[in-house]
Image 1 (tube, rainbow, N blue to C red):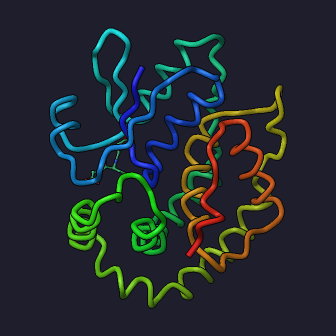
Image 2: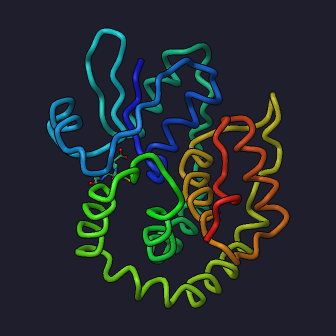
Image 3: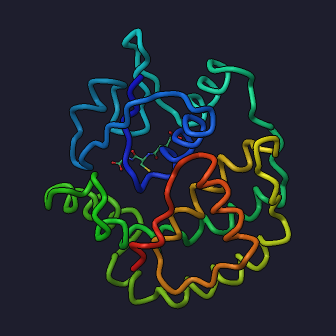
Length: 215
Ligand SMILES: N[C@@H](CCC(=O)N[C@@H](CS)C(=O)NCC(=O)O)C(=O)O
């Protein structure tokens, strides 16, 4: 199977998580951000993730792919419970996380931004939706302080047992990709429980955090 994706895309991380956790072989193909042809040809729209199955058929929508792989390979392992507190936390952080991550992801050597035209395409498209990147960078401290407070609120909600027999489920599929993206932001005060959680999910899904490249 082939997975078409971007490294900064949280929806793509959802899919990478289930492949990594279940140790299902897949070829990851990082598209340039301005490559419209490849996704258009595969699913008729310019959006990733896209899974191309061994029979050649293509499938979009991250959660559909997650469930497909979960059911395909071995025992279904995803616990479907998503606590309303976690859903609520994600909704709050969704209101500002892009202001921190979008202006940074273009500068940390990700494969989808390997060319200047891919960067320009992304900046034009996202600026039209989310506003000026430079302004967001200037406002970083305000968003970081909000995030620091939200991480303190998240800490007691996290389940730390993600060992071999630990719980792994939809909550992790929804939450980890957002936290991982925020590791590209320098100066965030990660709490010990959130750090433990991220390292444990990173290990069992084989998806590295961005910490080393934080800006
Ligand atoms: N509902 C879709 C959302 C996927 C999505 O929004 N992907 C973004 C990247 S994070 C995308 O490809 N956007 C088109 C673009 O950036 O040009 C899913 O869950 O798979």
